Amino acid sequence: MVRERRERKQYTDDWNVPEEELEGKRNFHLEDKLSDEKYSHQLVKHISGHEFGLAYMQQNGFKEPILVKEKAGLGLKVPDASFTIDDVRASEVNNDKSGMIPQKELFSHLCLDIGRRSRRNLDVMDVLTQKNMEMSMKEFQLYWENPNKDKLLNVISLEFSHTRLEHYVEAPLVVRQIDWVDNVWPQHLKELQTESTNVLEDMMYPKVQKYVLMSVKGCYTDFHIDFGGTSVWYHVLKGRKVFWLIPPTSRNLELYEQWVLSGKQGDIFFGDTVEKCSRVVLEAGNTFFIPTGWIHAVYTPEDSLVFGGNFLHSFSIQKQLQIAQVEDTTHVPQKFRYPFFTEMLWYVLDRYVACLLGRSHLALPKEKEKDENDVKTEPQETLVKKEHQHLTQMELHGLKSIVIYLHSLARTKKCVPELVTDPVALIKDMKELVEQHKDDQPDLAVTGKPIISWPRESKVKRKPILRKYGMNGSKSREVKKASRSDRRRRVRCKRCIACTRNDCGKCIFCRDMVKFGGPGRMKQSCLERQCRQPQLPVTSVCSKCEVNGYQGLAPDPEMPSDLMECSICYKILHPKCAKVEMPDVDGITNEDLPNSWECPHCVKEGLHINAKPL
DNA sequence: CAGAACGTCAGT
DNA sequence: ACTGACGTTCTG
Ligand SMILES: [Zn+2]
Ligand SMILES: [Zn+2]
Ligand SMILES: [Zn+2]
Ligand SMILES: [Zn+2]
Image (cartoon, rainbow, N blue to C red):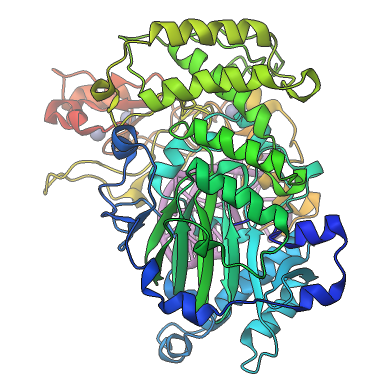
């Protein structure tokens, strides 16, 4: 992936090279490079999806490209390959389910959706002229489906987070565990992101996590290094790809700089100027991982569809910083670089200090159960402390180099995020952290557990008052577990804080409501109005005596029902009626939910032990 | 009866 | 896991 395909273009722009020279194309033949035996030696590590976890990372770091042939075990989610538009067979065969959208359409629907929602044109590279051009998603779809193409167009910088497509794709688990965007960047900032475009001004976080690449046969992307020293995951959904790979040794990076600055990219196949260049073929279904700084070129031998993403992480920090410096010296414009690269470094320091020393220097908005008040607060005391956690050498050295790197920046280029209240104190804490960990043992650092991550509670904030309505969790055969349909539906109490609020008009359910201009299909309560004490319907009656919860009187809104509903068998009873049947056992009242207990019968049966959490 | 919205399901 | 869609239940 490249943030926006720049390649040569960036430099031709800057230097104002006449058009004619651009038309010159290549002075080498790709066929030679595709077959030449001198690229045959392998620099790529082949491992299984299960092996490539966080522990692998902590053990080995990520210094060589990794090829995983089968995605099983990676924790990667991609759409079914039948997604692709040319799987005509699927669309013909699936006539069982009537009224279904033909599979054939799905891919283009999704891609169109990207275009529609972002109101943005695609950045498309014309392979022959190496020039970027814009076109609408619709135009590209026509091109893609047209069997008689008169030129080579390549889509390699289409980031699709915050589009419909995004939910079809999840990065491999390791990546999600180490990606700084997921584990370092303040969550609330990322959540503010709405635009699906990659316009820097609208970007609230480094939006580089999910790319789709669409390339027709013959496409070629010349040698480059991924922006900001990012690593890459790269899954070939359909088609095939050929990579030429060059390790980021100091010597090679130096040569790379020269090659880029020479402006002679079209004349020289960069792979021929270095000592080692390795070629690898990726088949459909393969997942490829490119480490920081690896210089690579890509050829597309057949129409291809690829999902991938870029990420920074803690196991190649020094290299990442080194690549950032390469970008400096080759004058790569900001818009082609990792967004908020330097800001991210500050956040990294804070995250490590917060997670290991328990002191955060971030002024984060506090989320409290107290409702109502969502205000900013001071930097927080994170009271997470356990036994000593060992850091890998990679992390330790990396963190040190961040400090040095930030220190080396000119005052105006330090990019301290506003949220970082006291950068000086932060640096000081980091130095203390490094000191504390100077004797950390590498083998003890291989835990398979992330050191830095956000508390996973963000979503659980909304009280799970109605814990899991249906569901038994019990395997026991003959348990006369009431089928879920027997469960009495609850209704809002109309008195709690939530019930007395007004519809917010902004949440998904409000926006769905007809009164707010929505289609009214979801038919759900406003999120702000989710009842804290859902009641049994006033029409409920005891299953034993068939009297309601109000001594047979008319329901009084002031008086609570005296019926109890069993959270296990769902029977509704007066406690006194239950007592008659089973005098020796008491029910267990559930404090979280009004009129809820585990009835004496279920308690006696010991069924409550099956009450699984969640 | 209309209006609200609960719990569940299927698709992603 | 997350979300939207839906049938149905509940209230007044
Ligand atoms: Zn709302
Ligand atoms: Zn309520
Ligand atoms: Zn009764
Ligand atoms: Zn029961």
